[in-house]
Image (tube, rainbow, N blue to C red; front, side, top):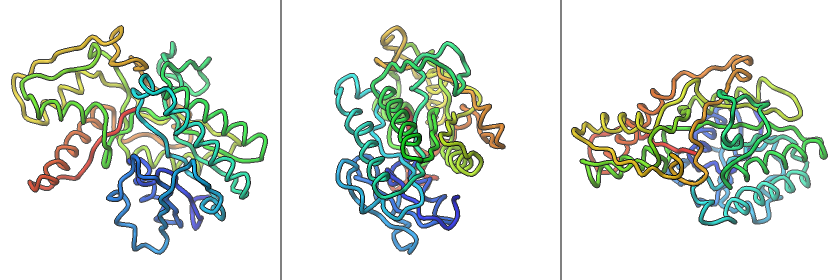
Length: 332
């Protein structure tokens, strides 16, 4: 299903999307659809001379039929990923996630493209009482507008599959880290420590614990799901098998930056949360995915360590200093 196909990747110039494009181009023709609100040209520039690669700069809220037509499958990653933003702007996730997904599904329906893979999120579970949390956990009660928008997209996709004979793969991600990311707790910590190497502000209590997964592991899991599952609607958690606290992440950043005597200042947040909608504990059960033959290479701490090293390397490279592997982080 993923060899010698024509595949459309929305958000393909973004963090996870660009890594997925790298992988898919090994055996397929790939079209990237991106409005570059979050994606970056530097993430896909190395493919511009590849005859199997096509780049379309367009918003999902614009007409899409001409872009979607002729593809065998769509990987839908385009979204506004800023969880915190929903508390200040209640329409952004509605428009950029839910309405955009509906526009894409309609274009697929009209042009006869009947397979879609969608990047959802662990935040659809809200504050789950079962940890590690399996895919059949319920009821689903997201506590952020971002989480609710992704759950709404899942429902739309499922209903289109049943109504219009489509097939889907839905990925519920833990926090994905690695090359080409642009924001998240690691970026925040590094920037704060660059400004003040003696004190680090930590949002919330610092005891929040979440699962992290390196981006190449994530992309391999995404491809593996499509190849190994063939139900009408296929839902998989994708993450590591453990979690790490925010304070432990701070320790890693301080160590990798080779700083001494850094004091931590906790904001306390909202009942220990970093912000409204921040889930305090997140660990996904990945047993369903493991039963298909996939398992992550790195645990949460190692994923974070690799991401911190890489982020610092990229910053050094941009500043004309010693080259680094150029890896950064994204957190949901």
